[in-house]
Length: 398
Image 1: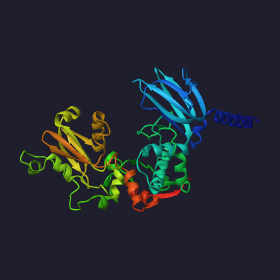
Image 2: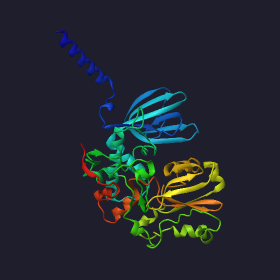
Image 3: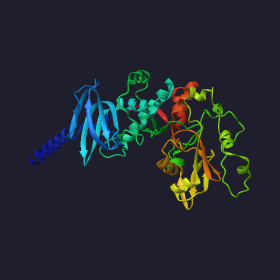
Image 4: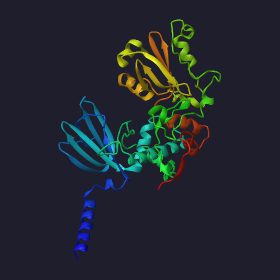
C-alpha cells in the first residue's frame, strides 16, 4: 500500500542520514579537541618519533587517521614553534589565512591526559590522584552535555581544560584508577559541574561569590588545612585596610613588609609545604596607583567582604566589579600569574595598592594541592571529594 511504501521510504532516509552524520554526534565515547587553540597557525608539519625526513607538510585541508603516536608541529604568527605528541583522527582546515586543527580521541584517554597536564609538576598522592581523576571525568562529562563551543567539544587551553597531548605517564595513572574508573560524581542523579583549580589555600570560594550563580554543591568553606597550616591561631585572616584619612593609625603603624609578614603563614617543614611545592600558599602583588588608574580609570573607593574576610565586590569610582571581573582586568595587563587567585586582601598603602592573598585559581570546587595535603593526612578519595563538593554522591556511571 501507499502508506507502507511511505513508511519504508522514511525509514530508509533516516538510515542513510545516520550513515552520513559523523559518529561522534551519536557516541560520546570520543571528544573533539581544538588543538593549539590560542595560536594563529601559519604552518603545520606531521612527523614520526624519529624526527626523520618523512614529514607531511600540510598544504590543503586534510582528514588524517594517525595509526601510531605522532608529532604535530605548528609555526604560529609570531614565528614560534609549538608541538604536541598525539594519536587519533585529525581534521585540518584553513580558514582565511590561518589553519585550524581538530583532534578526535577516546574520552578515556582525553581525561587522563588532561589530568596529567593540569597537574604539571605538582606532587601528587594516590588518593588525591583518584579524587582528581573523578573530578576531571565528571567535569568533562558535564561539559560534553553543555558545550560552550560550536563544532568541537574542548579547546586545549585553561578556558576548557589543559590538553598537552599524549602523556608518557598514562599507564601509571590507569593502574592507580583501575578500580574506580567506572565511577562519577553526581548531585540529584546528575553528573556535576566539577570545577577545579590549583590551590585554594585556607578557604574554598562559592560559585555565587565568584560567578554570581548559586550552585548547591559549590559552596564557600574553611578547608581542613586551616588549623594545620595556620601557625598563628590568634591572627585574623584579613588585614584589610580601607583608608579613610591620612591619620589612619593602621597605615602609620604598619609598613609593607610588616603587613606581608602578618599575612604570611610559615608552612616550611610542615605537611602543608609539600616539600616546597606549595609556593602559592601565600603571595603578594604591588601595583602603583598610577598604573592602577591606567587600567580602571579610577581608584578603589570601597569593597564588600565575604564571611571569610575576602572581597566579593570591589567598587572603583562609580563602577562595581565582581571579584572574577576585577581579576580578569588585572590579568589583561599583568597576566594570570600576577593576581594569582580570588582570595586576597586589597590594602591601601598611599602611593600603591598591596594585594596579599593565597592560592592559585578561582578557588571554587576541588583544589589540587589541598587535595594532596588531605591525602597525605590519611583521607581517602571519597572523603577528599566530599569535602570540596557538598551533598554529592559518588556513583557508578550510567
